[in-house]
Image (cartoon, rainbow, N blue to C red; front, side, top):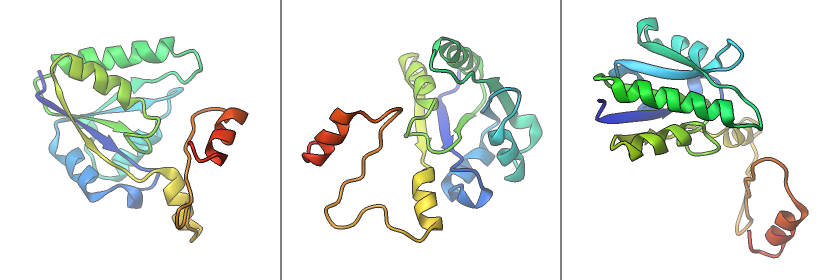
Length: 164
């Protein structure tokens, strides 16, 4: 059983947007799990561009739907495979490992099985976009709110009232 699983953020889609720490983690592990959606994987393409050898790569199908049942089964399958491995493992996330990431579901299940995890943060897409546009997302005491899915009137009112 793997003693520590590395969760590695690939950033918003360019080799220049992968952190040095994330890149180092990818090169020291024996296997790298990455998500595929519809038979395609931006993560795999990026891993190849980063020089991660093909024999290290292990794809898993990640269905994307509001009905999370199939995705939860995919996460459970990855957890099962990783738990059975005697090798060092990394699991990558497109974007960052801590913002709306599928890796959270996998990490929780691994920790429940007594396997330690280590996160290697990435560059979130909204920060990379602000940088590319040479703008500041917030200044002074302004607030930045990140919300999944639809933003409700109640959330906006709460933010406007200073409650976030």
